[in-house]
Image (cartoon, rainbow, N blue to C red; front, side, top):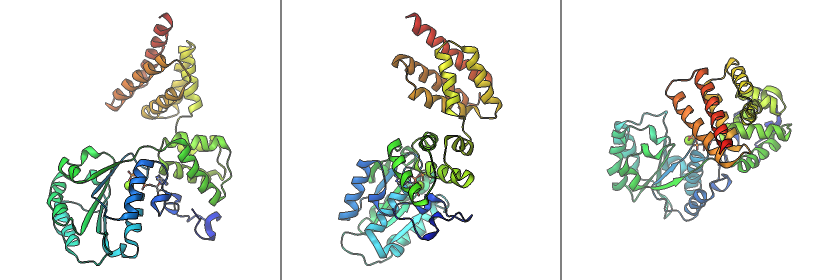
Amino acid sequence: MAASGSSSSNSNNYEIPWVEKYRPTKVADVVGNEDALSRLQVIARDGNLPNLILTGPPGTGKTTSILALAHELLGPNCKEAVLELNASNDRGIDVVRNKIKMFAQKKVTLPPGRHKIVILDEADSMTSGAQQALRRTMEIYSNSTRFALACNTSSKIIEPIQSRCALVRFSRLSDQEILGRLMIVIQAEKVPYVPEGLEAIIFTADGDMRQALNNLQATYSGFRFVNQENVFKVCDQPHPLHVKNMVRNILEGDFDDACAGLKQLYNLGYSPTDIITTLFRIIKNYDMAEYLKLEFMKETGFAHMRICDGVGSLLQLCGLLAKLSLVRETAKAV
Ligand SMILES: Nc1ncnc2c1ncn2[C@@H]1O[C@H](COP(=O)(O)OP(=O)(O)OP(=O)(O)O)[C@@H](O)[C@H]1O
Ligand SMILES: [Mg+2]
């Protein structure tokens, strides 16, 4: 994507967020999720948009894809033929009864095969009453108006709405996909970097493109150079090397060292959730016996659950390390 204008490499303080500056405007520019996107591309080409639900984790391109799709389908008519409502708008039952219905009844001349589009972003936060009120509206006006919903959890959309829509699933983006996009932005913004810095950004983003771009921009504006150290300073997550050392200590039978490492992290002020999510990701990618890895992941998962329940003490985390040591001992004995 082209960098817009000459201010791209300017270091002024009023830069617009890169996530917005580099938000793809065509469906074809959205990366990853090939199956989902190829379905959307066919719709963009042929028209006749079905009612859609786009669902998946944050920062994977749902809003972007819907907006791009609406743009490609309607072009200059977008302004009058698209109604976009997101969680910041009131979307109670009255809005469905009045605003959406009025929009659906409005006459707009469109080319054949094109329909007015109601975009309901973050639809999982709509009350079920409002969703109920949508049911019949969706059907009555289906010859002129189509609905596109985006949400993080499709189970929060009531069944009758789901049954009226085609479900398009988005999943977390792969490291390669994020890297490709980061490189485009890095080149356009002329960001100095070392490969380890990008690795760190990708690690902290965990498949979330928005987070990756935000972390890149935050590191660049804070330090003007993207290396591992700066990224972890900006993102303020436990350093993976530190956590990796803990896992290595466990595997080598140095329980005390592992605990000391953990205590150090805890005293630095990282929350137990930060520590355990990093630990889980490190274990997932650690080079160790498959059986051991699965057991480690299981125990970490249980501990995560207890932390989510509110038991996030140092003792809980140390207990987890003890469990992991025990698992390793048992595996060795077998
Ligand atoms: N697949 C992608 N390809 C290119 N850029 C992306 C992609 N996904 C996200 N981005 C970048 O991240 C920003 C946010 O993406 P988007 O608003 O589409 O996320 P979302 O899936 O709607 O997330 P949420 O569930 O939080 O609403 C975009 O402006 C874009 O710059
Ligand atoms: Mg969104």
